[in-house]
Amino acid sequence: MEHVLLIVGLIFPAISWLSVLGGHLQSRATGKSCSGVYVPFIGPILIDLWLHRVGAPGWTMLVPWITDIGTLFFLWLLPAMLLSEWRTSRFTRTMLLAGAKDNQSVKISFHKGGDYVMYKTWHRPDGEFGITGLGEPGSFESESRFITLTSHTGSTRKLIRIDDGFVVEDSESPGDYSLDKWILQRQPA
Image 1: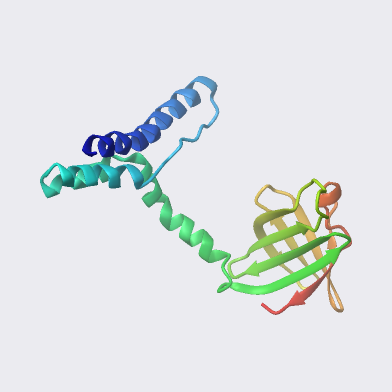
Image 2: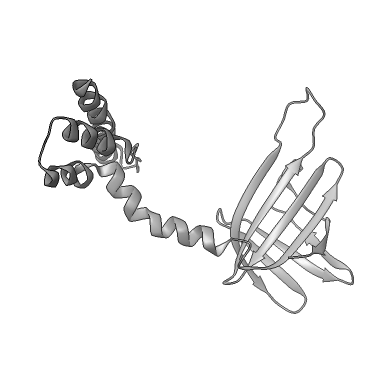
């Protein structure tokens, strides 16, 4: 049993290290960025169990954690992931708009700091194929007459204020993805 823990425990850090090395070599060869595959925690936990079972000194249990690049990258990126999640959480929401047209509905959530998240869903009958939902993060700028949305991909939309909400001006999005001339109403934030 002990050897199984060690072998399986070494597989996950090996995957991380080999994908980092392969990604680096691929990037150098093609000039394009390549991402690694990172599997945090599993390898160090299994190796620590093995070390405990074979009676290794306590200080050796730290070694798998500081040599596992998957765990190190995860811990390094964790603060940025938490900050990103916080910036678009319900606690920072300042306004919520919603609208519907045909078999589609959309919600746009605005947050402190100028971030927005749009969720669009398609309500399809059973058996009909096609997209059923998408999310779009981005930033917004608010002026007296309109709000400009700029997605993280660079596309823009304008929300023009009308008496009972906003009308969307969206000439960049194709077909089913467009919100052009949609009416969006304020919802309780």
